[in-house]
Image (cartoon, rainbow, N blue to C red; front, side):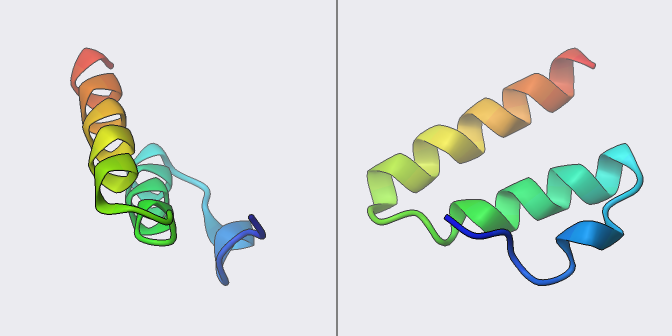
Length: 47
């Protein structure tokens, strides 16, 4: 999967979080999207 446009502009943790959530929309199935969205959210809660 190629990076989304604007990936080079990610400089802060919040920007990375939002970028990763946008990347999830590119995944093939709804189940996979939800799995990774949940994992990203859980990781953010820990930090």
